[in-house]
Amino acid sequence: MSKAEIKHEFDGKRGSFFIEEGARRFAEMVYVMAGPKKMIIEHTEVDESLQGQGVGLKLLKELVEYVRKEEIKVIPLCPFAKAMFQKKEELRDVLS
Image: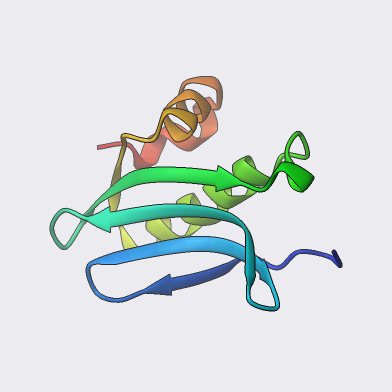
């Protein structure tokens, strides 16, 4: 897989930050909005071929950059995202 570009899609209620090549998604962080300024991270999944390369953290950092710009607060229900917020103090300013 070539250099991965993180993409974002949002339908007004649900969204995701993801990496895909062709029609295949290799990594995805899924969220749902719980009001206009509150986001719940529900799930993170990274393909076996990319595990251990920091891809999940890259998705989370992209999400954090987005919510900072939009002034949205985050509730991490996803175990991976929750663990990363505990480890990475510099990301915690977006927590609800």
